[in-house]
Length: 67
Image (cartoon, rainbow, N blue to C red; front, side, top):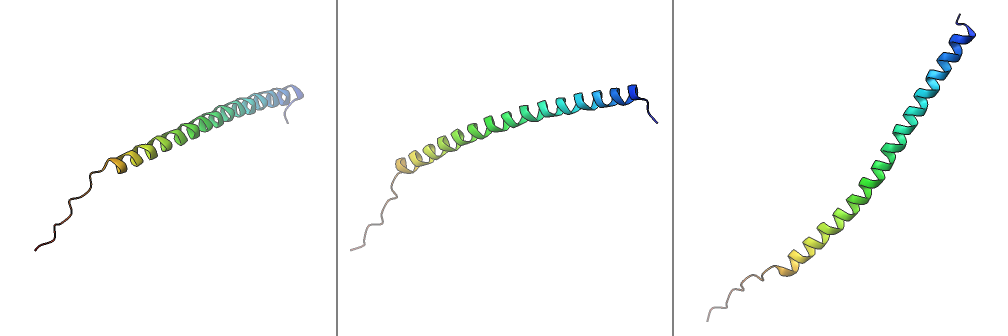
């Protein structure tokens, strides 16, 4: 059986470990949010480029009717 002092130290270590993990989770969550924002911007830019490319496309030569 562990002594009271040992139990206090175990609790203290585990509490610090949990706090560290929570801090890492918070940092990763904010990184995900930032990346999602960048993804939205990138998708908008790609959509604009595609739209411009479609409007600038040269019309295909039409076949002339034979007489």
